Image (cartoon, rainbow, N blue to C red; front, side, top):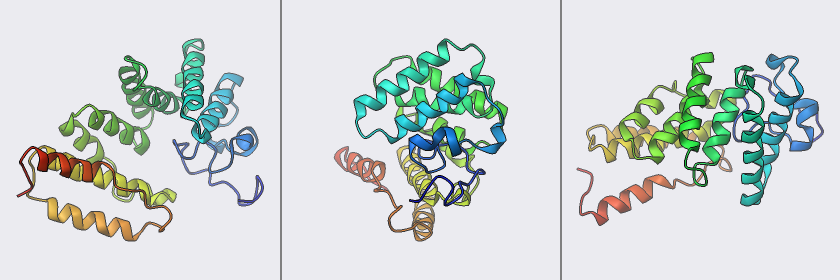
Amino acid sequence: TGGCFSPQPNVSVKPTPTSFTCGFPARFALRCGLPVALGLMNNAVTELRSLAAMADDAEDTAAAVDLWRKIVSMFLHEPGVEQEPGIAYLLGYAYYQLVDVDSGAAASSKRLLLLALEQDLNDGYARLYLGHLAFDTHQYSAALEWFGSIPESHFSEHGQAWRDLKVQELKICCLAQLGKTGSLIQEFETYLLIATKCDETDIITAFELPNMLAALVQRGGGIA
């Protein structure tokens, strides 16, 4: 994809689970992956961001989990690091990655994501993963509220239209699970419209939606 400064990283893009280094490989994280807005940071913060980039790039699940655990361990030994710009979100996402292997991870993730939102009310990524946390635990009303609080085309503005597509998919699932079927046709139309804005290679497979529909059929239900 070219060298470190070709193309120039988009510093307006918030570090995310797919962009902790603005799209560059982890080895470039310390040189060009840090958003300008963060300015000078201490070594612990820099290392946290570098580890997050490596964990996100890891192809082996076990290796990724080890890196996320290392991030959490560093956080626990660096009091106050979560007050650094963008770090509460990073730590909240790290804990989110450990939900399946750590019984206390979900609560820690929620606390840190809420802190990230206190620090920046316009943090769409914190809202996104608060929605994921609620959805994963079948709290569909809360999930729908979080997903609905994300501005329309929020992620498309950062070149991540596929995230808007996933949010719309999960909103449809929440509405169906809650029995709020009156607007489903309109929501499906919105889903298809967002899909047309995604590059073909960016469209991710809808996973939750077909599973939800299959579950409804098995329960003898359906969507009116």
